[in-house]
Image (cartoon, rainbow, N blue to C red; front, side, top):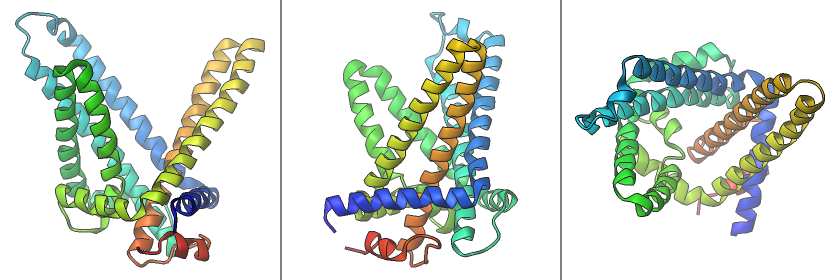
Amino acid sequence: MGFIERFSAGWKIAMSSFRVLKEKKELVIFPMISSISILLVFGSFFSALFFSGFFESTESEDFNSWLNYLVMFVFYVLNYFIIVFFNMALVHCTRLYFRGEEVSVAAGIRFSMSRIGAIFSWALFAGTVGLLLRVVQENLGTLGKILIGLIGAVWSIMTFFVVPIIAYENVGPLDAVKRSSQMMKEKWGESLGANFSFGIIQFLAILATGVLFFMVGYFISPIAGIVLGVLAGFVVFSVVSAAQVVFISAVYHNVNGDLVKHFDQQMVDNLFARK
């Protein structure tokens, strides 16, 4: 398949991901719980640091910058842990759905709990990478920001399929990155097409809801417009995030020889044909 055909296939498989969510709406719960959990962690961190006088101490000449990096590292690890935990639960539920088995939020949570060691190992690894990138960025000025932006983009591509890999393959973080990079190299056209689709859909949905709730705020109540707009944005983000994880799961399972239920089989065969 050429680039255009692969890009088009990625768009189609992205639309199929939304059809899965239409049939199994409970899958959207996972990114919702994940987002709420991250907000709670952020609120807890901010409150603890604020009331402990941490922010005031950072302005002192005697402040140890490594303490700041330690706090940042813990925050990164917790966030990566939460994101991967619930994404893995969603990946597992998607796998159950593809196999025609019963899907439930509880089943996804139980599976993630069974892989909690692997999730924590990945969170430590990803948190370390994130912290190192932040240190480099802060010490290289504008050049550092540009460099880290490029490295961050490459890192996102390399780790695109990490969640299902650490879920179903007994590999460590480094091997998971290598395996994900290999899969991304094989399927980069489809992944690019699907990600473009998700991005466009999310942008259009947020734009449409933004205009709608701006009108509500302008003609009815500003507070109502803001509240409804935030809630709508939260729902849009959750749906698109869930659809992207469904796509990742579909790619992973088909590459490994599993049939992907409820996806157009001819399209799937063309999409996932090995080079």
